[in-house]
Image (cartoon, rainbow, N blue to C red):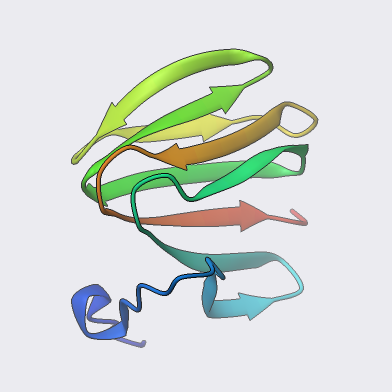
Length: 100
């Protein structure tokens, strides 16, 4: 077991870079800390689960935009493109599933 305090790990920088909280051959868990206007452009990937801890963003999934706010969880299937753009200061995390 590992307890991770997200607020203690949150780092907001001028240039966005996800922080990997945990990873193994089956999954990767990045922490997403973005200032308003920062984004991850849409891209294809494996199955992903995204949870918005605080803030507001626009998540683009297969070309469709979805406004997301604190408390929202999204499930994105393997092969669906996904990207995210922070509207407000954003804290979120994802679980990318790479193998069964």
